[in-house]
Image (cartoon, rainbow, N blue to C red; front, side, top):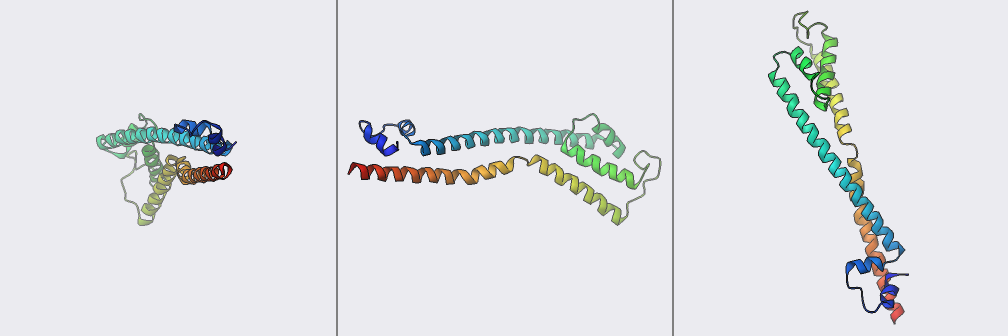
Length: 176
């Protein structure tokens, strides 16, 4: 039963939007249910990501406080063990591990602090950029679903409007 025939069968036009939803056909109900599900999913992702980004921001604050208090890289590395795992700490650890492989013993004061060559410095930068990219990708997970939902929802809404207009014209044609 379409909206137009439901409206004709009722005594007068629907009074509220809820009356139109109840009186809608299966296509209208399907579109509305899909849009409702997509809206619910969007809000879940938004709330989850907000909490996740807030936690990362707090972890970043603690990380930078720890780095500011430490005097040497070894002190920073030791202090990070007490902090919860965070993207900042993982990037730092990846860089420190690679630096430790380039200059064994320098971090623990066993050897003099020789500088890195330009090639080694570039390799260290690339290792840290790779780790940063992996952390950014991990944090951006599920955001593509918001983009997909944001792209599809207006089209489904337009489809619902077209169905409604078609039902209106069918109701006008059947009423004479």
